[in-house]
Image (tube, rainbow, N blue to C red; front, side, top):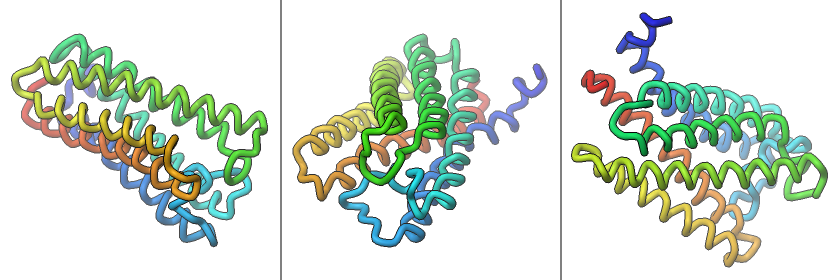
Length: 215
């Protein structure tokens, strides 16, 4: 186990799990939409693709599951690798980021929407609670990353990227509350896509960091 932890090549491969997760996330959206006749991405939530009664469930859910596996593995690896490195704020931010991916993976796996929209069942209520926790931990982690990276000399650009992502999240949340229901899907995607893309950015950054032997 210790030899694996000290193996740079192994860390480089693991660092790319975040990027692999991004690929499978967008695959689940693209293929899910193809197998969901009549799906309207402008109005409908992404979760409709994996709802229990969704016609695209059999294709979208496995791809979403793989996305979750890759993302959780990456976030755990990111936490283990950077704990105690760079600064304490980034270490704490990595803890919250890891918690977010774990809650997202297990929460959405066990509590998908019962049907498209919101049917107000126990399953749907739990899905909503998971979403609230995911959003909360995402915001906390990105705030901490913004502060932590801005405090460094070499990685201020990641602090700027983190702040930009946070602003997009805030804008997306505001749009969800003010946009007509027929454009709910657009506002939601602004939020979700920004988090997924941010994960991909962290993935590539970690890969370069490990490659240069800076850990």
